[in-house]
Length: 61
Image 1 (cartoon, rainbow, N blue to C red):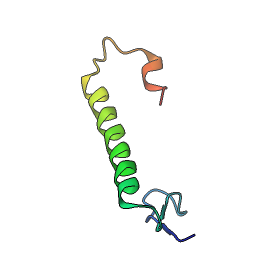
Image 2 (spheres, rainbow, N blue to C red):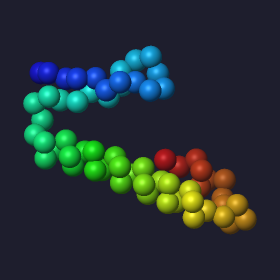
Image 3 (cartoon, rainbow, N blue to C red):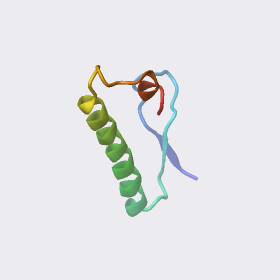
Image 4 (cartoon, rainbow, N blue to C red):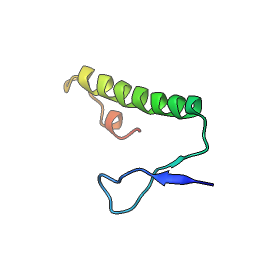
């Protein structure tokens, strides 16, 4: 199968590969899912108050 590595940004190794045979619908769904997860994480962090934060809040992924 043909896989294209994404350019690494924080490591010297490629860790994410794109399947060149995947449909555009599948690629879009995957990209949307990753973007939504990132947005939700930013929303969660921006809404936290240091007075109400629990140590476990920052250890869960």
